[in-house]
Image 1 (cartoon, rainbow, N blue to C red):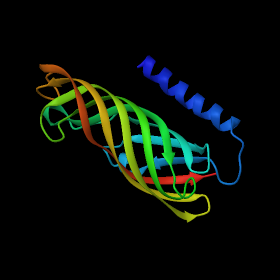
Image 2 (cartoon, helix red, strand yellow):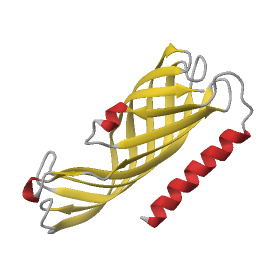
Image 3 (tube, helix red, strand yellow):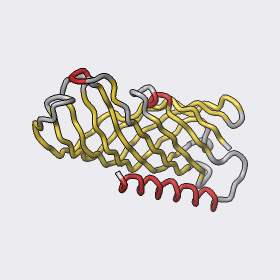
Length: 189
């Protein structure tokens, strides 16, 4: 946990220092939350971005979900800590219209009781690739819509239920799966 907090603090510090060093022109910096992740059993999330060229922006984000719902064998949870950093390509202008994105991603997760009685916990690391559209609602306020996929390694332990802790096995595998549904609310400075 301390190592994860250190990584988050480092990424956020790096993002903040970089934003201070970039010369500002017009509406540049953005901060967003993904409403779709908040509906994912209460996952808190925040992201920040800044333009590095007319068509490119650098972005970093984090997500955290500490919640467990229910008790005993009826427990349901999708706990996770995730950080990712990368870039977006904007064919028109940064923070306007269509975009394609790529991110380096790291996550620690624990989920169970949602679709099955089994539980899983482990680490995921790899890349996220995606795309979407930023709708400019008014000056300084955008709505973002998008989809993404994760490609990378999963190291996980499988348990027979959410409470008992009986280990069914450990595995490491390569995975390609949907990862993001983006319904973002973005403030542009």
